[in-house]
Image (cartoon, rainbow, N blue to C red; front, side):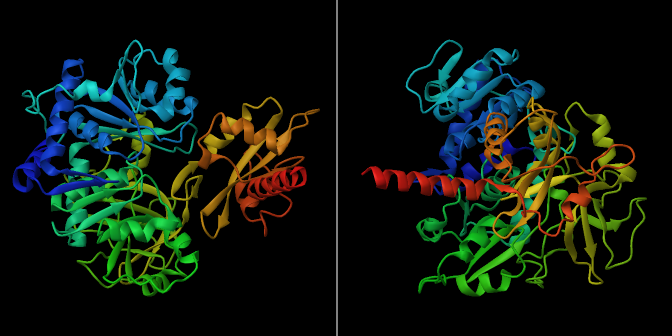
Length: 541
């Protein structure tokens, strides 16, 4: 396959009116998806978007997201997905750093546009969804492409064209932009379908957002490669999850660890067991509920491991094709064909089986060990070379390997916090809070949580004479950080432990026996606040 355009057009020709996308009550065929992408591609060309240009997309899960992305792919242009929970501060950075020339945004995020418009000099036209009028330099999305022909003007595209800039939380401040080409997506989609034996008779349901590479590379590409239908839901809804599985007749669904944990915590019913087996594909399912979850719901959870940078170079768990799963062990399996991995120490020397170290991977093709991985970090060659030290991709994760070749996740080497499937840079949280005029020092650390994997806790040291409240810090963060990055726990201290060179000893903070003891808890505070408001209303009635 030479490009995503070729893959989409082949699927449209061979599958025609077969339904590719299920979204709410809409059903969109492979042919219709290709036609819409062609119209969008023509509209982009008419607006001056050319091969190599970038367009930012800030939309929830919806068909228009795929129209835009495939339309960009068809002309060799690139997508810059923006997390729909980002603030104006965060969105402005992504648009300027990527030099995006256009932005697609819905009515729910229009306030973001108003906040950043004058701060993004490269940004041209803005496409608006769910709005009935547009101002200068704006256009309603339906009018943008609706009058265009479906036959795309001739544009040369290839597997090496840039397909997207995928921003991932960095460990040293602002997010890093991973440059990925069309091969990146084609490779992951092919591996996914092959390893899980997905066919045109299957249907894939995802609650994961299209601004993440998971939904892009597994769900969207998986459907094109296999001919399977894909179903998009706007987000994970526990109360209607199994109803959606039946509504769309899903045979596969995607999850992050928090999803199985929440579903398993719900009260049991007589209808828990599926009448037919369903396969879940994801990562981070708590090992103590893995086997019990499968038995209760008649679901087989297939764990995988990967990263935005690693792409198809991720190490997958034993899918349906390989078998021999190790349920309830926290193993994410063995490398897929064409990929090799090993565990190394700080000097990049391989450690014996059973010992902890950093997981490093690469393609077995020694002429191109980076094949299938990101091309590099945008405007950051030093970080790119650092992550590719000695010819191996350094994941930044502590893992171990057993004598059978299975890998097990242990902990993150990077200073990251994993909350409800989102990677949060501790440094980014710290940088935002340090802007507060009353804060002198801050350290953000993860706190284990049974449902969300980890919660964010910050230790704060006030400036002399300052009097800062936890509520004030939350309000400050709400203006600068996406909601999932906002700390749950806040603890004020007179000082923080430091090394002789002045670095905060985060390891010491993480090793506290009970990190929640003595800390202000945002969740409990909000619950108490709601209860007091209810009581006040009751008394005034």
